[in-house]
Structures are given as C-alpha cells and as structure tokens.
Image 1 (cartoon, rainbow, N blue to C red):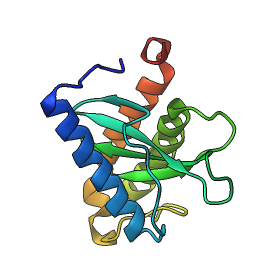
Image 2 (cartoon, rainbow, N blue to C red):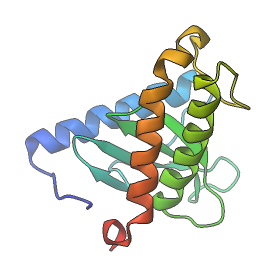
Image 3 (tube, rainbow, N blue to C red):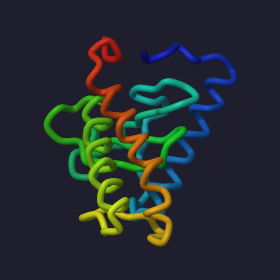
Amino acid sequence: MNDNFKDEAGEHWCGTQRQQVLAYLSSEGFESPNVGDWPAWHVAPVISVWAVESVELPGSIGWWAVSGDCPTDYTVCSGERHPRQALRDIGNRWQKAAVRWADGLPADGFGLRNAAQEGELAPLLLSRSRQFLTIAADDSNWE
C-alpha cells in the first residue's frame, strides 16, 4: 500500500506533512526533533508515518509520528522497530480514548488541547483508530 507518490504534488504533500510533524513535536516539547526527510511509510494524501531520531541513541529511531488526514500524534518506538508498530500503538490508544470520551470520561494519559471537544470528536477519532488498526493488520500493506 506504500505508494510511489513521488511526483511534484506528492513531494509537496510529504514536505508539508514533515513540517507539520516538526511543528507538532516542537509544540510537544521535543527540542530540535530530527525527523526523516521522507516518510517511513505513507499513502498520500491520506497518512504518513515518520521516523524520529532517538535522543538517547542517535542514529536510532526513538519515536514514530503520524500525520495526514488524521490528528498528528507520536508514539515511542520500542520492540518492533517498524512503522506498522506506530499505527498499531496509536490506533489502540485512540480507540481507548474515543470510547472513554464517548462515555463522557477522560482518557488515561491522552487528551486534546481543547478537552471540551473530546466528546464531539470521539466518533472521528474512533474511525481513524479503526483505519490505523485495519492498515496495520493487513500484511499486504507491509510487503
């Protein structure tokens, strides 16, 4: 499923997504995050997964970040060092959060900057979480 969207429009989209990831990580407290020049995995213009260099182990992936037609988010890279891990981890976290928000409850360790919108955005986040988990589960996306 990793497309070859490397024409001018694709390069522009990927460059825009990289800038979005850099801005998001900086706003989350990452100091000068080192993000790959090209997504580790993507389907433009829907989703991109970015490798973010580890601070403790330079040259290694420390986090994965996602952006595209979804909220920009990140997760720690542990165990399986593959973009598939990122989609699974973030998809599971979003799914749990969306279910709690739909019930009017806060999500453990996860929230929006504007918590008043969590209930309203729960269905969209649940939809994206299912999309991430479906993509991650399908071996044909990772050939």
